[in-house]
Image (cartoon, rainbow, N blue to C red; front, top):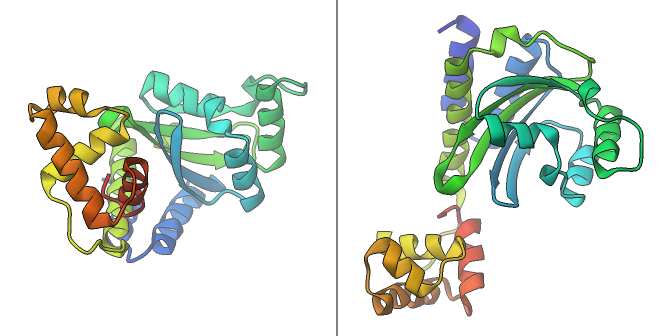
Length: 234
């Protein structure tokens, strides 16, 4: 492990808040000639992001649901391996959504970069992107797949640990089986489907869901799922 990578891993491990993680990634990005970074986790059409992109671009990206057409996200889901990219290779100037996305990205200094994808649980995809305002940038120092994966997982787990340490606790914690049933409910599985997937009786699955709703003071199952996600339990 080279000195810069070792320093990044150490800084991530020692980070006490998201700002420290952001600082560590920004320093690493700038050392390799990149301007910004973006960590993105996708699960179906839902996304979670942690990045140093300009706030106006973040608002535009999330507001227009650009993750659905973003060529970088699409490629990351398809290839599941580190790759370099450039907006110069995307359609430019025009009325199509993809061309509009490309033009707005370039206008906000997102022009080229490298993306490191990793497969997560329940069909999710995690990806870490280092981006530059240059038309092309030499991505070879970061193309080593082992190094890239190590960075992505370090960021993922540190963010997860921090989220778990700052969540608002319910009046009683959920049991492992309650969490399992709520997790499958969050994936859109009904009681019968969850019973088949877990080997638990359907009535028992419903009991776990009702118990979890009571602990969270949730009136409905969708409210329970939303509260569990907010608390970092799923």
